[in-house]
Amino acid sequence: MKKKDKKSKKNILIIAYNIPPDGGPGVFRTLKFMKYLPEFGFNSIVLAPKNAPYQQRDSTLLQEIPKTTKIFYSRSFEIRKNSIAQKAINSRRSAQRNIFTIFTPILYWLKNLIFFPDEQIGWIPHSIYIGSKILRTHDIDIIYSTSHPYSGHLIGLYLSKKFKKKWIVDFRDLWTLNPIFPSSKRDRFLERVIIKNASGVILNNKGAFEKMSEYYNEYKDKFTWINNGYDPDDFKHLEDLKVKPEVFSITHTGQFYGNIKTKGKFPRTPKYFLKAFDKFVKDENLPPKKIKINFVGNLEKRDKELIENLKLADYVRVWGYQPKQKALEILYMSNIALLIIGDISSSDTVIAQKLYEYMGLKKFILAITNSQNYKNILTPYKHFILVPEPTNIQMISDALKKIYVDYSTFKKEEFKSIECYFRKNLTEKLVSFIEIILNENKSSTSDQ
Picture 1 (tube, rainbow, N blue to C red):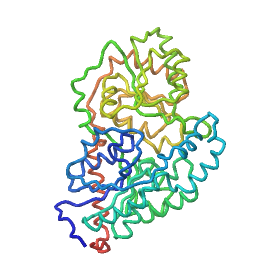
Picture 2 (picture 1 turned 30 degrees about the vertical axis):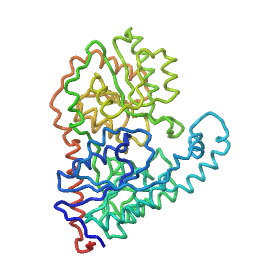
Picture 3 (picture 1 turned 90 degrees about the vertical axis):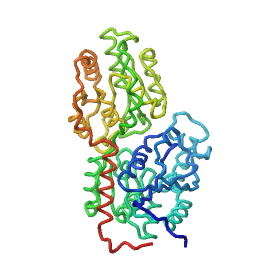
Picture 4 (picture 1 turned 180 degrees about the vertical axis):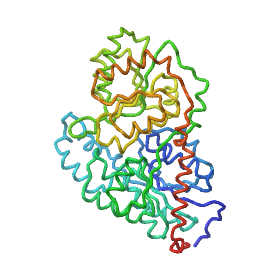
């Protein structure tokens, strides 16, 4: 057996499917933990897939990974690389009939049967092999796995059992208790096994924590929550930029996930905002040179068609996906940050990452949501207008008018209440949770 590395700091094995150059929303929580863990006495040793087909890529994020971080890559079979299988899966979401739609129900059933708990199950075998090598050659103090995908937790479960290591499970979103995504008996069984065997479980907001604690009451002492947040370092390059005073701009960042339905409705959609905006600019007789909307992210085809039908093309720019720094630049140059959560049952257990960055950039926020959880977060921030009826076009239009007329009177005050969302502070909270777990039942932890 090889000698283990000498260490001056504690070592944490991070099992994460989403790391840079992935540029999607799932990467930032783990990346920021990796960035700040060394400041609190932890070295990050990361296990990630080498050939993951990330849909959004941002190579600039690689610069944020500390030089002390060791990354070990495992091979992964990905169904998304198989064009026939992927077309069959995608056809479930498409209205266009083709050869795949005929067999979609059967193919989708087979996909869910074989690729359990998720499409990334092909990541597990080689990751277990590589993870075992890491644990034999490095003095790992604790294992941390993060989802989605949930297959990462199966890797963590196996390694923690085999090497008798404490193991923390981080749910970036709810799994079986998520009302948007249906779950099976197999999902619920596996989630219970994971929670039962984990040393600690982290949720990413208080609403999710409360829901999980109620459902898994017998394991509630294992649970905590650590919010997502923002990193002031991400904003340093923005200081020299200036907002154009002649154009009033409203910006929404991120996707709407419009293909996801809840009770037959599209829960998060710009439809009602666009109709309200159309009413507002017509009522106020505002030309495109006076006011603009930015959508930094992809829109559904039906949303683009609505923009054309409402004759708003000169008012609206759809940027599509943009790297992190470019998205922040567009947001920084805007007057108003737009938050559309909609009327969905998950809104008290899912907090959009964009909200924290909106507050971090000290933007005035137009929040269209009936979620009490969002209201609780926004209330100490103060700089927002809340529209509690997401489908009320008149109410949204009135809010737009108030913001446009009164914007010059809004003052930027001290934002002391949002320091709790600094990524560094959140990492410190993670470290405190780790230390509690490591200090519990020390006698039961075996040296490898």
